[in-house]
Image 1 (tube, rainbow, N blue to C red):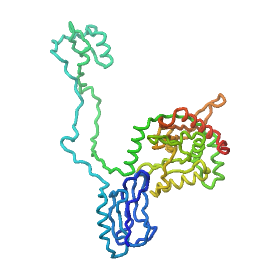
Image 2 (tube, rainbow, N blue to C red):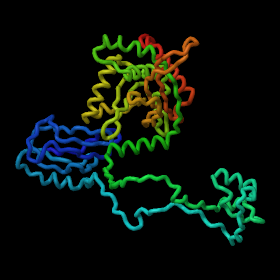
Image 3 (cartoon, rainbow, N blue to C red):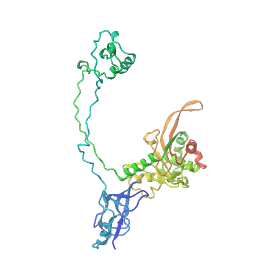
Image 4 (cartoon, rainbow, N blue to C red):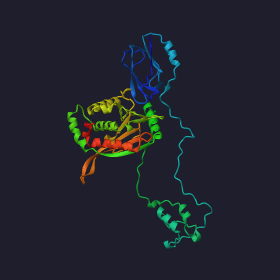
Length: 425
């Protein structure tokens, strides 16, 4: 009995998938658990496994083609098996669409128009008869406003014809004056080498992931009223404690791991920031799932550390490291991309001092973490060197008020400035 392989729903927002790569071809033997293909969704590239042994009899969706959720993409059965009926069923499903699009051919109406710099317009109306200019500067009569305008523009009154009474230079003369080009003899004596170049560009089809990023963040930015709160955190004790922590930890603990643990603990004390806007209601989550934004070649993914408040620092470090490797290798699964209740975006490792992040909907908050930088600080009335990190909380004002966000940041600052507090919460 042949088995129909349909496009699975691999994320909560997925509506269709692109076959990125087929790892098997028609006629190949397939074993249960083997990877048939890689599917590009709106969040990541994931693997499609075979659930039964057999032979790949039919491929219904070619590489780089799109299939809707539940669309037939392959059939597995026994060699020589008649799959005509199954193919007929497949034809009744939504039509597969190409994933790539061709750029429109420019037409005459859309061709770029070359423009030149505008020249000064002539003064409206009849031009008064020129008044002879005297070689003596003091005889160039001009209104005070005209003098000021000429001075601001760097014009010499001796080169401007006045149209006022008695040849007086007035405002409109300055406005309509077009300075003559600088004489050739005054140009610097410089020979410019010939430069040969060729205009070039590459049009790259937008991937499903990049489309999803654009749609979700545009919806967030233009729908959710963002406001931002920034705090400077003294990281001296964290910097000092990290080598000791790593001396006993089973794997290297990063500053981001420490920040993630502190954020989870601060959320526990301020559950109002662990919320989501659901149009007709506000959901206050009782579980803490921290999304950790990660850059990948195709764009951005946000794998999730679930129940982060209940995990040790070493546990969080191991999980984030594993998620980062899976994201790099395009092996994130649906569980890894569970819906986060709060997101952290850290660009500190790229020497970014501070930035603001766009909220990852439907969550109400995202924390943008900057570089830990050694700067002059004032301690005990003296200027000394200290490690400072800036963190900016983006909040959806429909859910979180300023005082709530500020209270959360105050607790986060206290936890990081004295990390021993994390041992007793």
